[in-house]
Amino acid sequence: MTQSSDTSPRPCPECGAPPVAGLNCGEQLGAVLAWEWQDPELSAQHFLTVASYNLQHPAQFTAAAYAGLRAAFIDHLDNGLPVAEIRRRISHVAEGSQRVLQPEAERRFVLRPWPQTIADVYLPDQPEGAAGRVRAWAASIRAEFATESNP
Image 1 (cartoon, helix red, strand yellow):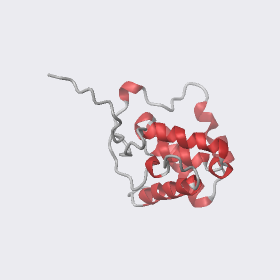
Image 2: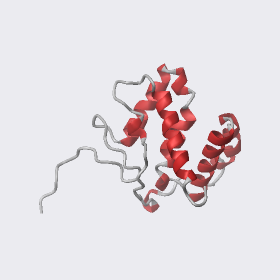
Image 3: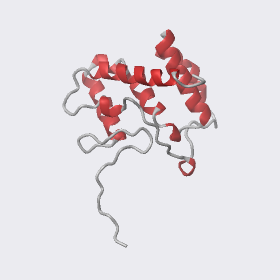
Image 4: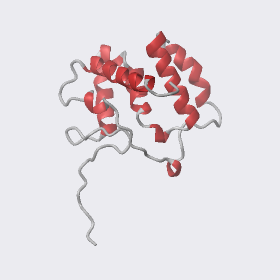
């Protein structure tokens, strides 16, 4: 049996984001976060950028951590909960022995098709307008949650 030497990026097994310019979804996130340094409007959307990405990659989180992030994300979008208040509320999660991340051996990737992913935000060499793309991405995730039986 011959092993394939194809190491080209493939769609994400969790969010389904396609590779863009040879970057997988995590690398695309890193590129968008790097753009924040030059774009105050995008930097102001940091919570939505990171939360949107993490909500589309639940395997890495404990059920409680994911539920807390989801609730904070919804409260932020629906009711304008300030990011500073979100940080205050969840600061206890990072203290002590409480786990946020699943052990790697226990992570189970389940593909969930999303209407938008980080690949809709990361447009190579096009940081202009990324803040608006982040807001649209977050809104699409919120809309998906609204269609579920227990939002």
